[in-house]
Length: 145
Image (tube, rainbow, N blue to C red; front, side, top):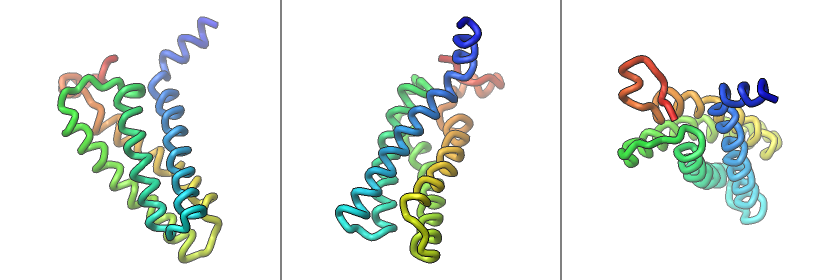
């Protein structure tokens, strides 16, 4: 049991990110499905709406639970977060446009594939560019909880 706790402490950030990333993915996919299938909103606008909802959810959960940010520069941090998400949002929209509108493939399946790619990119951006303690970065250390 001690080894399991030690392993969790070592990988707490990644485990937490995966959990909250999965929750964000559920928000993204569910809102896409509601927009596309229930409300009959076209594919690309449905993708953009679901992206916006999942980004708002992800910022709050990443700031509080994953990276435990104490930064008082919330506007700067949120701006960097949204900027990175805009970049990965373009990947999401591009994948969905190509897979669904051009190739005619299954929308929800490709939404899942797209989200896997986007989650990986978002972790890299969040860990190394957004939720970084500036003092620790100067010393070559990562942010401490």
